[in-house]
Length: 24
Image (cartoon, rainbow, N blue to C red; front, side, top):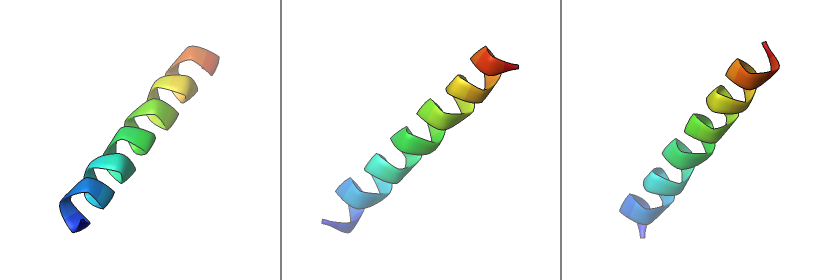
């Protein structure tokens, strides 16, 4: 379960960073 949770968190952070790049 923890591995899946960490994977989800990493994916979310990656999406957020990509979104910030698009905005900037």
